[in-house]
Image 1 (cartoon, helix red, strand yellow):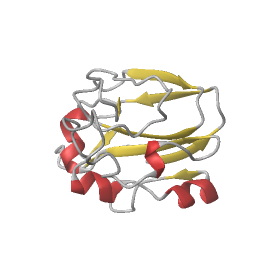
Image 2 (image 1 turned 180 degrees about the horizontal axis):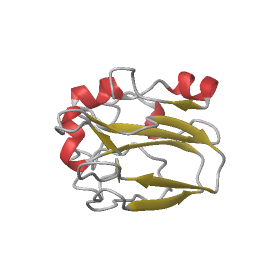
Image 3 (image 1 turned 30 degrees about the vertical axis):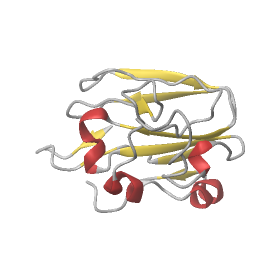
Image 4 (image 1 turned 120 degrees about the horizontal axis):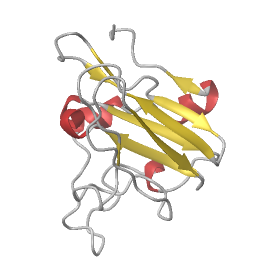
Length: 149
């Protein structure tokens, strides 16, 4: 979890990663105050962008030097965001095993489906920030654009 000195540029590094099932993922807050929060309706009504049977997470606010861990056992795509910086495009994507689940679908896949009427869509800037699934699968790890410090 990164930030420039003024807090005007925020991002996860890496922003995309491919791992095997059962892998523990650790986020470390390097600067500013951040969260790592799964896209899931249990997290403030956000749309589902992790595998349906996976457990959602929300780290709460982390300060510099603090860490948060999850172990991801269910195969699929896991999209996540930082609560205070989602609108700024601070998002990330983890692929566990083979790509599958809602994270492989269009961002509006849930429109007009029963029980999803109150789900919050992924903001436009955040949508544009996600690395492509094919890029993560081919490279294994994606770091943010070179524009970040």
